[in-house]
Length: 330
Image 1 (cartoon, rainbow, N blue to C red):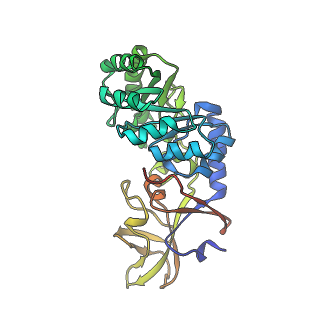
Image 2: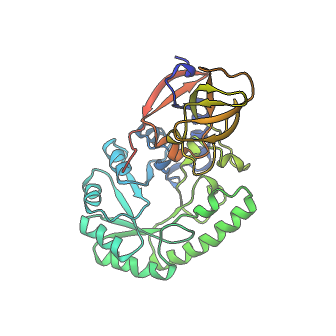
Image 3: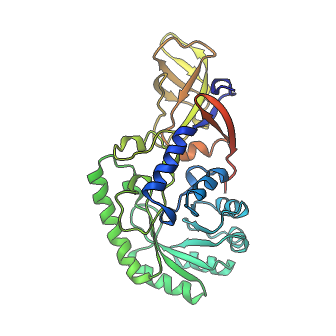
């Protein structure tokens, strides 16, 4: 089947780009220093490909990801890089077949993890604008976790505010400021892990002994603005033209088919004007009639993938398989 024969909207990956990205990152960060973040793709089968290349520990955003990877035999070392207080989900992770480490940043998250039987934690440090504790609170939180019988494996800090900055010098300055805080916290906490980072900082953050990159596998237009990243665009959304006006066409993939937090998608078939619930309007480059197929390129792959049940695998325009996006939801 050709990609243009898929029912639309259809999410698909260019297998040549995917293979290139996986192999390139494995060469850049070999072995377990890369802890891939599965929130980017939410697929057991893609995680298995990463493990085969030597990346056997994984970063997770949800309990569903942790439990799904453990059930698939990929639970050698799973880090839930989010705070969680739900006792049922914490208990399920504590009782699963995998090795599970949970991020904590407050007495409440420490106590919830301990009460559920979680055995290992990292102390999450606020180095940007997301979760985490103050540097000064890191040592006491580590002491509280150890007193509760848990092992403190180290510290985590995500410099998300630097991740999408196009200018590499500005990005590097932001990383240095964030990592100064994380280094001070690690001195107070101890442990073997100093973990964080992502695709946008994987090559310039030399302070971490683990990199939690995820988007590199398929990329998106937001990251393509960073000229120092070697990875190829690999994720696309196939849509059909369902209506034609004198100066634009309307296709059948809108807000409910793609993540929009990083802006509009782009398209080789026209200029994207705007997106609504079920539709994207394009000023076409050529003559696009009703029924024609168009390709959209998502600006942010993580929420886009999470909106679809399957990813179609395409090589040279032909659909050669599909993977279930089986780690969606919570």
